[in-house]
Image (spheres, rainbow, N blue to C red):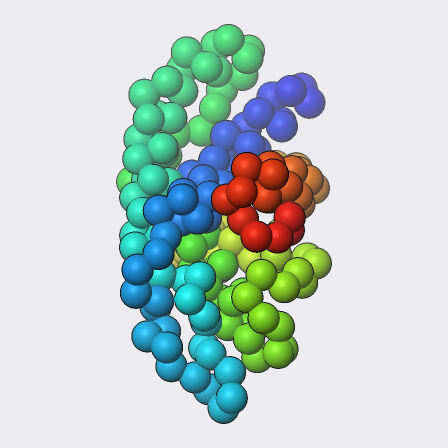
Length: 180
């Protein structure tokens, strides 16, 4: 039962977990805010680029398509049924994750935080909120049926742990300048 719950929750979130990591690897290029400021601060900063956002979104959608292809085999191996991703849900999760991260960057700039500064809670769950919100908008029947309250609970507990672990790994590999 617990394996099924955790596997289903993490599987359902994979298209949202991957985009920001891909954006780090594929980023660079023109910043989304074009260097614009609001008052004395940048709107977003150089870390939020068009290329990273597009690459991250495409990677999340492509991952969902790939997960659909292996869903039955993986589910059988785990002894559970894993959710399938309609294209609208995949797009909502992937693009929503990117938009959630962009929104958090905007909030951080307004708080006077520099690029890379940690804001506990916001850093770990911004993309989850964005992903689930856009998925609910684009796939309104799929989202609540896939993210039951127990699965949502798993996501809210597991995501900060995964976030801290993957960011520390990216820092150790030299892909990030901060370990958060």
